Length: 196
Image (cartoon, rainbow, N blue to C red; front, side):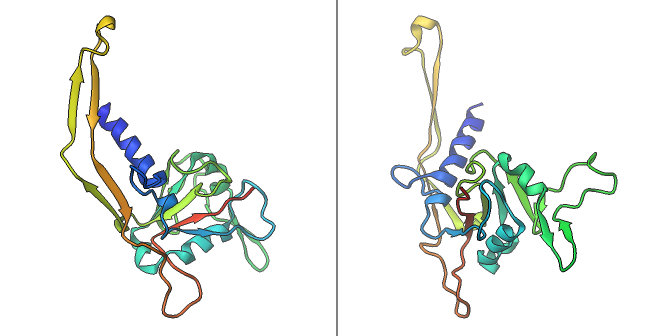
């Protein structure tokens, strides 16, 4: 239970941490790029051009290690995405031959999708994240320590436990990269901007 609780808190810190007395989370890192919504895009929607825009802004060297972190509120938007050809509209996620009785696809642009409540709510900046976590450094200052005490809860005949972890996290890049040729900056982490 304690290891699961620690994993939950670390995920939250590495994604949303402010950097003040805690890790610098992806959403607050100066090297993270936020991709603007489509012109006239409706609130609380995700489009195929949003996904393409995010993929375009990720540094090509990071593509092979990237993962999508997406809030579960976005599931309907993701699986109903379509892209328009010259004469027809095609679903981004084609159902398996047996229909929707099988597990749905769990990759986007060939990279894994991780559904997580640590991503922002649908429509908020960071509800869909593309990141290469090999470009994020995590440092553990001291070994983890577990302590217990009967003193605080002795009237309830209970024992208190606590886990002490001194951990830091920060991106390896201090800013987005300006390519030698091209106009758009590139990065290890890309988020979709707010659609309100």
